[in-house]
Structure formats: structure tokens, C-alpha cells
Image (cartoon, rainbow, N blue to C red; front, side, top):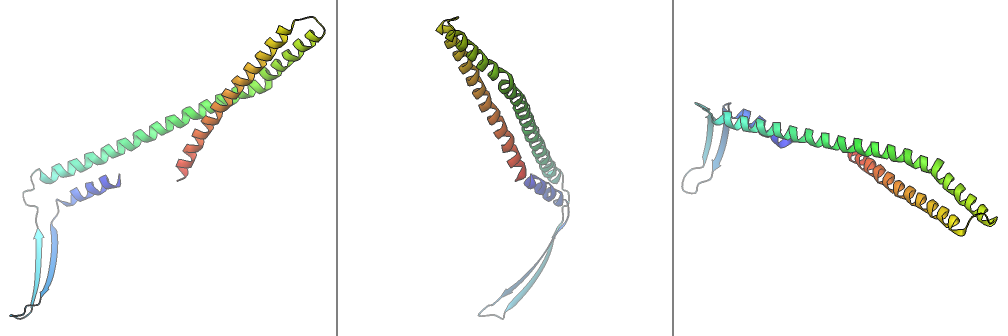
Length: 163
């Protein structure tokens, strides 16, 4: 981006006169020493389209660089927003698992176990309740991994923003 800005400024300078001064000293063995002073000016006479084209091209590169930067910023904002929303929704779901589903599953296992001990249900009811509890715990763990992944993505953007 800075390069494109500098190129645009330099292209604009191509339409102005360019002054230069040169001082030179020569030590000559067979002749006396020589001091030369040269003054020159480059006048952009009849610039035609040459400076206009280079100036337009530099401005176009600058505009393209700004547009690319805007695209990257929009993309990063969308990614961060998506990660935040997923993290927030996942956190809410995780809280529901811990507050509601896991206690219900534990209660079902305890109920099935009590019914089995009193010989009212077969062992398969206890095993089914345990399997249900394990399924809920596995789903909670998968969700916890997703929530952690989303949080890490948010932290990555926070670290990038801080640099």
C-alpha cells in the first residue's frame, strides 16, 4: 500500500521540472586540475500522454491496493463475527447440557439402577440408561471442543489486532 502511494506521488512529480547540480573535480597529470560545475534542468515539454499514463496507472494501483485491503478487512470481520456467534451459541448449548441434559441422564441411570435392584426392570434397562448417559457426555465433549476451537479463533484475531 505504501509502495503504491509513493509511486502515485512520484508519477505526479514527472510533470514538474527536474533540477540538478553537479560539481566535479579532476586531477590531471599533464594538465592543470579541472573543476567543473554543471547545472541542468529537465523540462517536461510536450509531455503528451506519457506522464498522464504513468500517473493514471499509479493511481489505479493505489486504488486496487485500497480495494484489496478493504476486501481483507471485510473478510476478517465476517470470519470473526461468525466465530463469535458460533462460540456464543456453543457456550449456551454447553450450559444447557451441563444444567439440564446431564443431570437428567444421571437421574435416569439412578432410576434404572434402583428399579433393577428392586427387580422391577431387567439389566438391559440399566445398560440402556448408561449408554444414553455416555452418549450425552460424548456430545457435550464434542461441543466443548467446538467451543474451545471458536474461542481460539477469536483469540487469534485479538492477537493479530494487538500487533
